[in-house]
Length: 233
Image 1 (cartoon, rainbow, N blue to C red):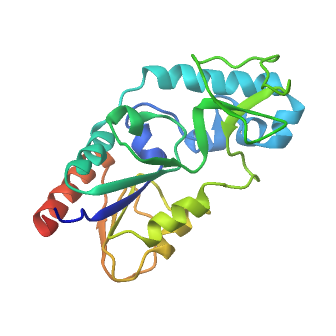
Image 2 (spheres, one colour; image 1 turned 120 degrees about the horizontal axis):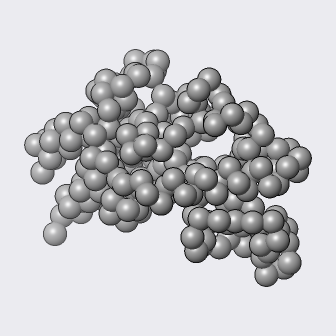
């Protein structure tokens, strides 16, 4: 059996927005009245842990009821014919709900918590609530397993290796403005076909084998999938 071609897909907030998940960039940098740095920075955490915990509790509660849209489903469906690695900037689990089997979360995972003492101690969450007094096995307060502004992005090295090995590179629902994730496209060989799907087309310098689809993931992924199947299968 011939080896499947490898698609690496970088996804951003636009994919989840179609499922009703709010984004950091909604409402001019405020998220339900909170300045982003209040709830997504280590300094914010030190200032008011209860506000930060409540903020992510509400995000989890919302995400529990969210359903994958046709963008998520279309990416998962590509696994029938291709090897697919999803590299997502999103912290929700909608790619997994849609059936994608290999998902790299660059910015952490909403449904996991981790120790504030030892970052290697990461736990699956049962339910949506994380409270003051919830502790790791070393008796340290648990925090959301989220990469906050100013923190290292530990999965970036893993993601860049995947990008280097891609046969096809796909970008869905991101403006390519958030680094280091946006830099992944620069790891892709110049001759590798690159497809960008986003209704607000990012300003990206012209390069070889670049194909642009100025639309939502729910329709754009389907078009790209049809092209890929016709061309490579």
